[in-house]
Length: 150
Image (tube, rainbow, N blue to C red):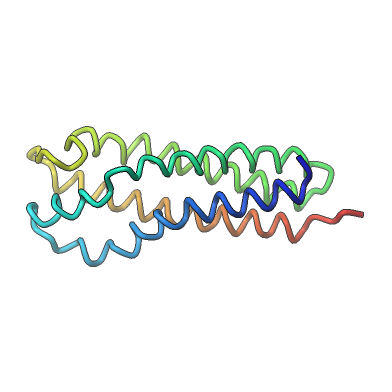
């Protein structure tokens, strides 16, 4: 894989991850005041969103490849490596905070007593991950801008 090809696919794949991530962030203010019934109903729109793991895993692989390919050029390498680490952080935070909330609520179809705390945890971590994903995209673009073919 050439550097330009890795740059292209990294940017596209991270952008694909940013779309649903950004949707979570943008919807947050509208969902904050919902009661349990409304919130659980709205949560059903996320069925099938586990497929976002596909471009995320692709982005992780390609940003790692990009970091390896840009290693000879310090700034390009550092931005590519940063992008990889940021994407890895989103995956780790998902499995520490978001996934357990999904499991505890049976994907928001069952309401345990602490459902409100789980909602806050779920929404907060999705919002944080949206910002982290945006930073990963910016780092990848900066890596591409810092790369020189000479």
